[in-house]
Length: 273
Image (cartoon, rainbow, N blue to C red; front, side, top):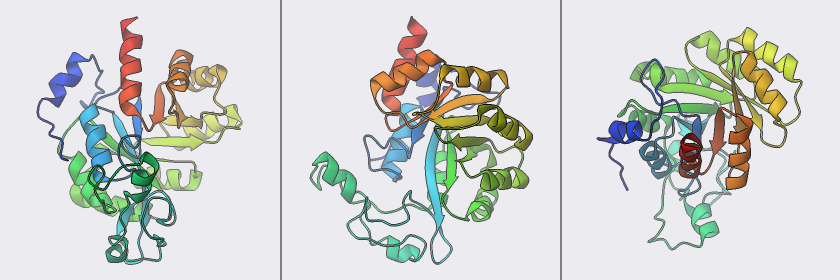
């Protein structure tokens, strides 16, 4: 399936979505591994769907393959989502292409091959090129191994800087991002239990734009303290309607979710109250 973006800007404007100073959408909806509740995670259809829905950021995970390709995958191996188990970092991209990465989704959803056709692991470069076809949604890259510099080489070659951000809980990696380009946004992922004051200080000193706390630990007080410090408060990863509504009512600015369409609807309803 392929989604076309002509008319998307008008559709989003009709929904009342704000834009930031560069013209990108600014609605606080991060599509976690793409629209991964409806399509196999970290695949082109999941990313295409998230673009068509109008999430302002799409989160994805990256590794370096054995032959130095930056590939899009969350796990260290392909067992959970694929029809065979291969180590991502110890396999070449050609070997990884032999895996049907839609298998796990198809099995969990009890779909046929006709309903959920085989899919292959994408390269980061291909996803960036997809996103660069439009000017509304950006990509947040989560480096699962030591691939920050390799990702930047691709970003710079494609001149894709304005479409890119990074997220992860690893402070060293996120500081590495800022050392390579201070303008690239960083969403610092935090666990449930944190020292809020200390982490706010670290985030500010590091030049990060956002602190995204795991859903099990985020409180209204933390949200207010993060916001007061001039950072964007966020939460990961929330998939139930009740959970999404709870964090919206709490004033959370950014929510990572596998169901961006549901979150967009809830946000629209909230604006209409």
